[in-house]
Length: 71
Image 1: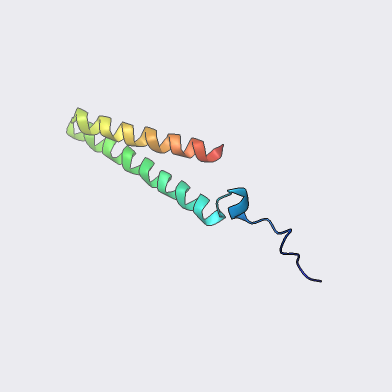
Image 2: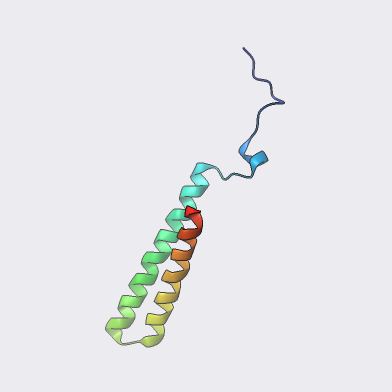
């Protein structure tokens, strides 16, 4: 039995990301969320409001990326 190459639909044709790329972007977003959490906690410990706010912003962006990945 042969595969009819005219009937094969690739991920490139459908615009779907390969599974490895899907995982990679989630891992990057998780790492970014952890970085934001760490900066926020260091900012709290040092009583540095700017660093704390930067950490919150990084964490919020990462959570937004993770939410987008789920949809």
